[in-house]
Length: 314
Image (tube, rainbow, N blue to C red):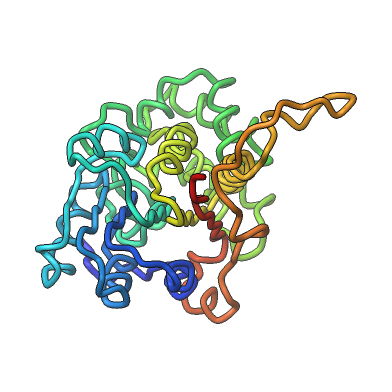
């Protein structure tokens, strides 16, 4: 297993997001290798409790080692961030002063061939962030109907050749079920290469779509955001880093709704029911990596950071 340090995306921008805040209680919904946590703990001496959630036990083990000097302040939770209400009840915590969510898959997960996240390393067609869940990429590729496969590639990967990819997979699996990432690459790489952007591997979007589907990432994100806003203390901030247009759309819409004074903004006549805004938008447009960061860490190129602040109650 590769244990090289994961490069935390938009690290300085995340630190800046919480620079003016006092965050004695902080929650990170995707702890990963602990890079953001380490920097926040160094910068914010006032942190008394840092709750780190991750559904990947290997990530929790790595973060636990990396953050050992703050062990008395840390609470590690093996779960998905969408279970925030149950986690809060378990810890008997009513609110936190800051929340960070760094979505997507980490470098260390990509580099573990046995996890099946990468088209660059041959491994089992797995792609589970939580190894205890049942659904795998192999099950999707080998059993889902062609129409459903195509919809996954279109909706979650925004793959323009979604029909062709689904058709090729269904043709190939009649002769031999897919068991490894290399087998999937071998079937799709040639046909998709003609249409892929320069410098981008032709299976990038296919693997992204399968991973998102396996882990139900978009639905769980949509479930989490209202809970997170409710869980924030007044003047607390929520920062979310997304890597996929679907993720960013969900974050943008959830933040805009929470900041709005209307329940609904569509219709004719302008007669909309009022509601009380819950947050203010710190970022109206997402923060993206600098050119230097993208050159240093190409995996950061699609990252977008959005930030909100909970309003004080009257």
